[in-house]
Image 1 (cartoon, helix red, strand yellow):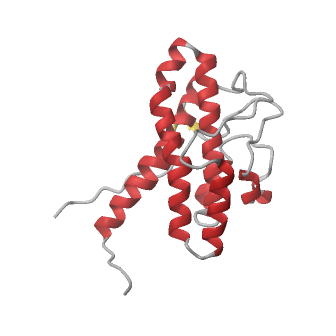
Image 2: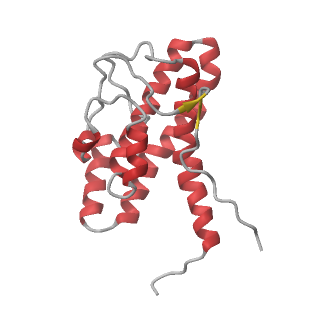
Image 3: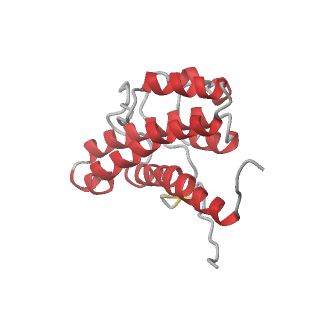
Length: 189
């Protein structure tokens, strides 16, 4: 009784926030890495990835996220994750265009994608309490050192450099990734 609910609005938000924002970022990154860098991604061994810059620093985001979760303000906590991690990561992808860069400068494209993987890692960690299976699928799509079972919000506080090179472990079919979050199609009245 505190708000309005409609299936059409649900589908719009799902498509916008989950399918288009998170799902598309995951598909782009995994697809580009799988197609262009099968096996190990060159230039990523020992390199600490850089989280694409958002309105808040990583430390500010984690602090605010924890405060909002502890205050049971889950919607605001997720909003902070989207505003500070996923939207900036998608904007970074659009600016850097790794799908074009990979044709001209593969090593530079690999580093851009490595940074986008960091955004996916942070997002999967912060989504763990809300979407556990989905966040696990994202996290396990790469060879992160910390086992999923031991991952907590603390793991998102700093970048995780790979001892070896970044490797995509996500299931690919001929270099293509299965959509993480298929869009909901609905008829408009």
